[in-house]
Length: 298
Image (tube, rainbow, N blue to C red):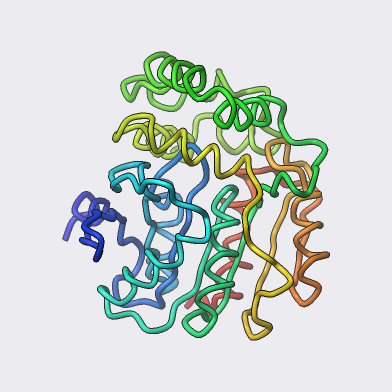
């Protein structure tokens, strides 16, 4: 099976919705569900594909409802996501698995920790974006504006994102245009990593894919991110092992987000990287991630 074949796999859920995922890494390896950032899609998982294959990890990157190619789910909440993951795992005949949430994938990872404790080996979150309940300082100004716009001015939000899709995320431009437009929000380490690298093209491609089903899913997702998560973190079962990674130089998601999650989950294990940013940490912390997930390089 080619990589292209593995990037677009579909299951039909009980409620009739299509859920689309990429089945990456080692197809016979230890299963880990990957939750992407925003606006992004399952294609973000390509960043980890090669390394996951080398170390024996099956990385299952899933499009959330209304993003990428997954069907929209009306009135969904973050806490509904574990039902989709449980059903997907059952259809793939996976009894136990790990969770890997990046950026805005973090609340979805925590929702799974809350609801699927008996199925989870370990939860890992990198560069987590915090809840508005944390009253975080340092969140990139444009992101605060966008999340509030989606909630209070959805028509304006859709107009803005249509412009972004048409002007900023054209596939034929590759990653260079995306890098130039978003240059200011990257840390120095992010800029060094991304400039001229294949990772930038992967991220730009994943962002383009997020728009495939239109703007309804993107708008609803932004509303969810910009609202309270609806998860009582202190009630996450104690048997779930939770690991947090955050770059101190992250200019997109402030490190205070992970520190607040750590405070609310004192049994979690947090590691802070002084010189890493938002995306550079994802690319440069593979050794730690694989080790925590119980996967050792051969």
